[in-house]
Length: 427
Image (tube, rainbow, N blue to C red; front, side):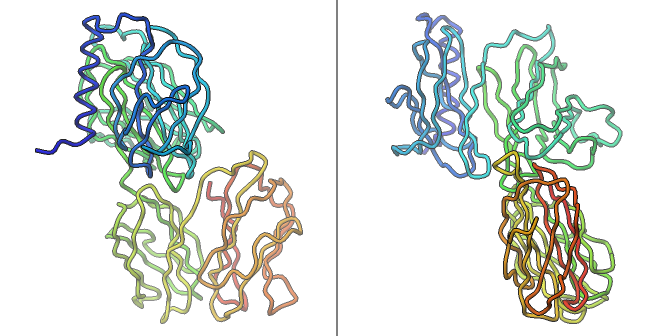
């Protein structure tokens, strides 16, 4: 029988812990293990001071511990067998302490977080739960630890509240009675807007459990995992996506659903709806415009992704396109991310967008979106959308409050001769 690397790592990790419990490590060295919480790196290595110390850690798995001399070390993470560093820095380790190096991705960039694994034991009969939020792009979040399946609308106050932040945040350790639970992460103050879900969480008395939240590819949803200090690691990657409807057909009521999940029960175009969470993967869409069924192409939704379903044309000949959204925070704290979405019909000419008189995007064709562009945030920004077919701007607004840190889409929808423009803050 062939055994998976993840299974072998689990057995080896338990073996190391057993040896430590029996006094197997008496050197005073630090104990280090590595968690591969990336989405796109199948296996990684950890090098300390230029030598590979932990090799071939599979995705969604933790390595066994390795003994490391307590000191300040240079560490480097690479793909297994490769030489190019994915992440590197220096770390000071304390003797006789245990550490986990969590390796994750944020908008395609590999990042790391060191987690100390020697917290004091919780009160008798309880487990200690601690949340490490490495997904700040999702904004303020609430964390609920409840009995499995309990509706959050009546669950009372959240177990943890984490405010919006530009970087990682963490909570104190909360004692929780031992037992079986469900852990859900929601948008701050919105218990129905679930961003991550661990449906089955068993907390044993005496354990200290780190709940680790990491970014997804869209930025709005969250991947979750549990790391029992000096114990098991269990990943719960997000299996959902968020989709919203943007209707640019020239009038008519629009009804849309994906795999039976309503995106819009019925609204008159043009409009931009809110994100709706749906299962990721292959999705079958249904769209009607003024009672006319529109052809919906095959749709593949990436787990953790954000998308916009754009509908353009006329009620009788509506065309459906799915656009990928990126709701990660701008790389620079002084910028916003801005893009133009052309949802017009009746013209083949592309549109252009300027912000504070600087050209941001040019020739964005009907049924498409421009690439996100970094623009300096401005509480009095001037936006202008123009068409090569007219000397008069399609849209012009001054003194818009678009402060740094956000992501915005400028939707131009409807008949190209007299379109409706909607500026939407996506993040």
